[in-house]
Length: 83
Image (cartoon, rainbow, N blue to C red; front, side):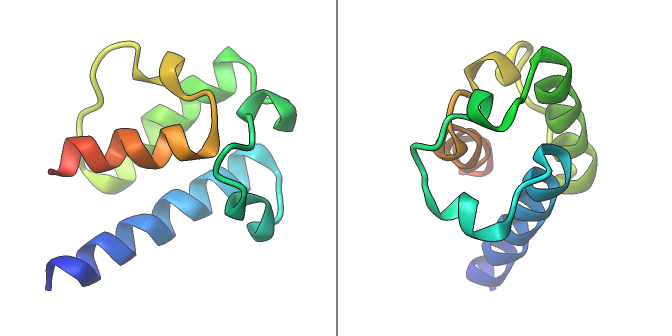
């Protein structure tokens, strides 16, 4: 059951990143891809953080979006909160 929940969260994270960064799904397969390379500015990262909180029903630590450097950073941050 926990595995399904985690999968759903990954799908939600993927959907948010794809929409907000205006990228293709296959670009998420590059974990070290820098969000700045997708033209993510501070406002975009803040909006991603808000959407993650709302859609995953979680609370990110203050300033968490400043640690969103790569695609993997986003997944790692959410993973740490959920564990």
